[in-house]
Length: 173
Image 1 (cartoon, helix red, strand yellow):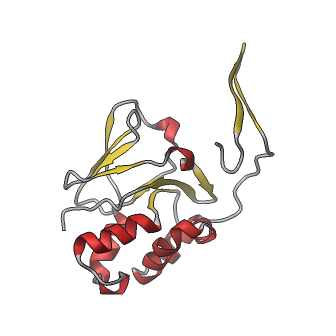
Image 2 (spheres, rainbow, N blue to C red):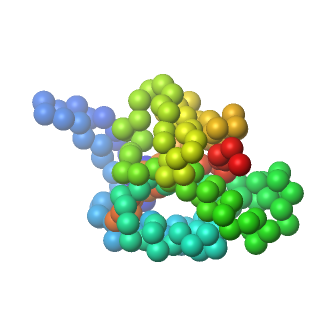
């Protein structure tokens, strides 16, 4: 997929490039990262967390950023794993650091990633994480693995790009 369009014929080689036929017209993004996340129901907990941590303004107006965005299911699993009753039970400073650990400066598309592991320095720069485009996995500073959701890579925003992941990655806290 490219944004909301399905690639119906990939990799048509021409003398000066490659064509991918899609089933919809592609339009440039008109929403910032926060607006895009707000428009996707699977990110409702992420949006609540961004607001609670005081990062909404930054992620809406600055950038460009690449956001590795955990789904609602990923946040629910994290709450259960760490014994928190709700998002409100997570201290704001910890939540902010966890969220900033998912954000990288610059607009990095999946096609920009090398085939093997790449060490990435997020905005919460006390720790790095590794992205492996070959296996579509991220390994955090604790050795926890999250999967990149292949059908939801390169979600465009005016100030960045979102890659959906199936687990919350954590810095060493």
